[in-house]
Each structure stands twice: as C-alpha cells, then as structure tokens.
Image (cartoon, rainbow, N blue to C red; front, side):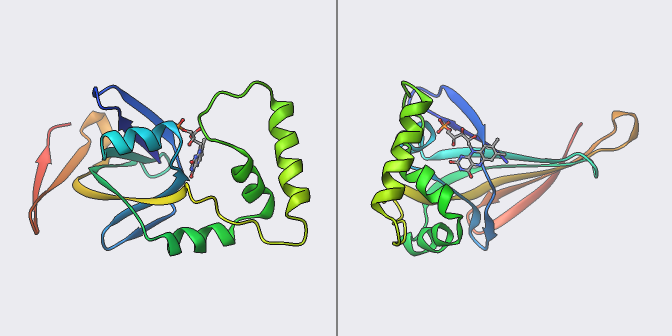
Length: 166
Ligand SMILES: Cc1cc2nc3c(=O)[nH]c(=O)nc-3n(C[C@H](O)[C@H](O)[C@H](O)COP(=O)(O)O)c2cc1C
C-alpha cells in the first residue's frame, strides 16, 4: 500500500509498505520507527493509505490516526521473517544517509558473525503500527469514466455512508 505521512509543518511524503494485516481496529504495517515516516508520525500521528488492484479496477483509500501496536505482535512478525531480512533490518538505520553500500554489507556481515547460532533479536525500534480509520473510500472502475465512489466517514461509533461524484 502507499502510505502517506506529513511532518509537523504539514509537508507530505509517501512510500509503499506492506499491508501486513487488518483487524477490527485498523490497518497494520511494520517499519523502523527511526525512519523518516517514523519521525513524521511522532510529530503528526495522522496518515493516509491507498491500495490499487489493477485487474479488478478497485482502489481503497483510508485516512486516520496512527497508533503503535503491542510489541509482542512485532516480535511475532519479526520471528516469522527470513534471517537475512532480520540481519539487514538490524544493520540498517532506515532513512539515514549511507556513505557506501559496502559499509552496509560489512555491517550485515559483522552482525551475522556476532549472532552466529543465535536468534536475531528484534531491534526495539522495529515496530508495528496501526492506522485507525476515520475515512474509508472504495472506488470501482466503471466504463466511460463513470466510476463508482463510496465513502464511509466515522462519527464516534458510527459510520456515515455517502456516494461521491467521480
Ligand atoms: C513493495 C514495497 C514494499 C515495502 N514494504 C515495506 C515495509 O513493509 N516496511 C518498511 O519499512 N519499508 C517497506 N518498503 C520500503 C519503503 O518504501 C521505504 O523505502 C522505507 O520504509 C523508508 O521510507 P521512509 O524514509 O519514508 O521512512 C517497501 C517498499 C516497496 C517498494
């Protein structure tokens, strides 16, 4: 999914992340909280996401507040990841400048040899986040640009449904 965040000045940024799960409360993704998105979310805990399925002409857009999920859920997903990915995530301070790729590969190698025969611990900054939706829009491709748009807006505990012009 494309995940948009904004800094404290309202300057937007967007990137793709894996939509790892959806539960009763919202949409879950995992990332390094020291990353650009992580620091933007600390300054401004609101985000938007968009998903697009080209073969069936569907788009879903979501807006809402971000919350951190329980560390045990991050542990669970972390432990399901391939060891090489765990090592790479441990060696990388996501979004910080990198002087050379060789340095990164050397860091991965160093961590790998230090942890040989042991599990790779989850970096405490590698966390799961949940976007709790306030707005969800479903867009469906229709012929001649007469697309269908349905929006759900949350008011407290209930959702209001409306159609939007395409
Ligand atoms: C298809 C795809 C999936 C990705 N999934 C993730 C992910 O789940 N978590 C993550 O932190 N970065 C993921 N990335 C990398 C991000 O797009 C991005 O480079 C990284 O999170 C740093 O973003 P930031 O500097 O805006 O914080 C993915 C990239 C692509 C293209």
